[in-house]
Length: 247
Image 1: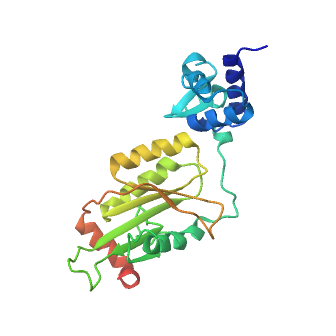
Image 2: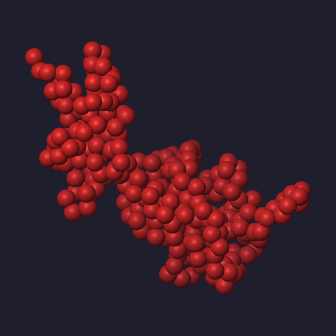
Image 3: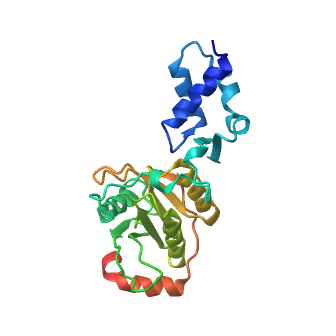
């Protein structure tokens, strides 16, 4: 009969085999525990937390707290192999999420008092046009009036080209006080973790959503945006294109 540590190891490998995207530490412990009631939680913890060190040829950690089999690793990027990355069904168009996110900015987190969907090339230059742009201004009833804020967002339902989407969100800081990157929660955990770290470094807001359901995207904040002062020359230049719609 296999020793307890061997049972735990084999079960961990079996579970990871069926989850190419990887499994987070706490989930892996829970899943092993559910397969055999006789295994004690502390024993599982003791045999899982260094799994990537004890079996480095089989398991690796693409990001903090995430275990993945090395057979699913892209050796050049350390990320999940491209052919294993889940893709959003073609029937769901990116534009279907613009207005729901604009409404979410206004009604759910109240980061805007008015927001509209844009997309396309409304700003007519290579720096791109936000998918959603909004403003936040004080109400007449506010005792202390706050300066006007411009809020922009880049929405990416697809789980590839996340770095490109992040670059777009950064570019919007040129004319926005706050910028959001909105990506599918179906993206690999290690990719989301890297984008999350980048967003924290550059002050970009990160929002995850269900890219399969435009009627109920379930937007949720992973990282809040940092208020930044835009270049007013560019802010005024771009706002002229949408003055009648946003102001």
